[in-house]
Amino acid sequence: MQEWAPPGVDPTQPSIARVYDYFLGGKNNFEVDRKVAEEALKIAPDAREAGRANRAFLRRAVRHMAAEAGIRQFLDLGSGLPTQGNVHEIAQALAPDAHVVYVDHDPIVLAHGRALLAADDRTTVVPGDIRNPGEILDHPEVLRHLDFGRPLGLLLVSVLHHVNDDEDPSGVMARFRSVLAPGSHLAIVHFHNPGDEHPEASRVAVEAERSFNQNLGTGRWRTRAEIASYFGDLELVEPGLVPLAEWRAEPGDVVRQDLTHYNVLAGVARKH
Image (cartoon, rainbow, N blue to C red; front, side):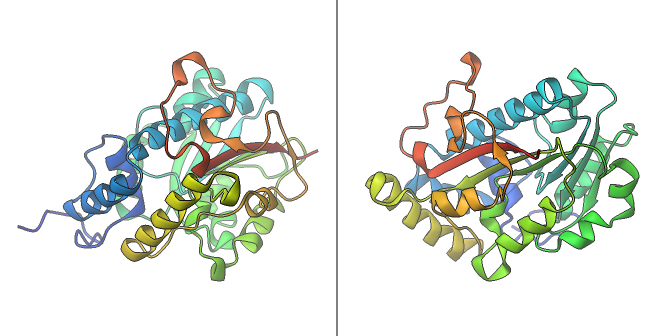
C-alpha cells in the first residue's frame, strides 16, 4: 500500500533528508527511505551512531560560534528535517538575538521547517540547492535575515558529500566563501575515505559509496586533502580537521562509532 505524502513529494523515491531522519529515530520517512537506510546499516552497522555524532558536532560547532566567536547570524545549508537541537535553538539559547536561515530543497523539510518556525521572526527556512549558490545568496528572505557585511556562521553539515564531482563542489564552496566577512566561521562535515591509512574504513567507504549512488544517486567519500580544500584559505580552529566524534568532544557526547570512526571528518575554520 502506498504511503500518503504531501503534494510535491514522491514516496516511491528515497530522500537523503528522510534517510537521515530514520537514522536519528525520526518518523518523517517512508518505506523506501527505510530500505535505503537498512542497506547502509548492513555495510556500516554503526551508521545510527554516526548520525547522533553528527548532531552532537553541530551543537558544539554552533555553541563555539555563538559563545566564543560572538557570531549572531547563521546560514545552515542542507539543514535537513527538524530534530532535537536545531541551530536556532542552540544559538538563541546563548544569544536570543541570533538570526538563523535554514536552506533545503526537500519539500518535506520545507513544510516541517515552516511549521516549526511560524512564530519565530528571527528564523526562517527557504528553498534552495547548494549546487546553485546564487539562488540562495540572492534570495530575498536570506538577505532580509542576514547581513553579509558582518560575521556569519556558515554550516555545511553532511551535505557537501552529496555534491558530485561533476557538479563542481570546489566552485560551489568558493562562491559561498566569497561572501564571508572577516570573523566568519565555516563548519563542514564530510564523508571520508582514509585510504591506506585505515584500510578497513576505506573498504567501508567504497561499499557505502556504491550503495548510496545506486539508491540515492549521490554520495562521495573524499580524501582528507579534498575535504580540507573546501575551507580555502580560512584557518582551521583547534583541533583541526578530525574524525567527527573527536571535534571538541564533551562528556555527554561519547558515541561508540567503532567501524565508521574514520569515515566522517569534521572541522571549523575562521576567516581573518
